[in-house]
Length: 70
Image (cartoon, rainbow, N blue to C red; front, top):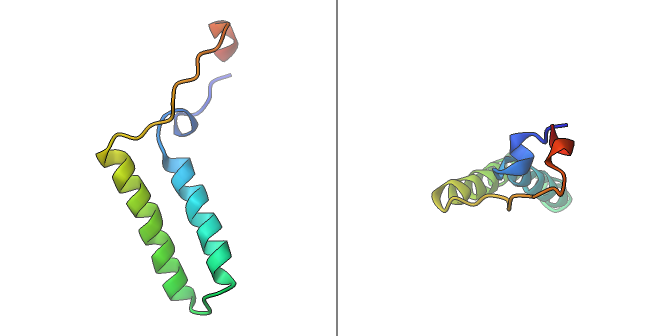
């Protein structure tokens, strides 16, 4: 079984999860859906920008038996 690249190396999934948690949390406090949506997009884009700019990646996982990863 191969782990998808978005969960192995890049920060795509993490940015999306952080954005979705922020959106749901702020939906309880901000009644303006447009403001909530725009700030959520800005947060996700900012996370991805810094991840690309500073080459943030997940640490590589080394398995004892590499055959289990195929």
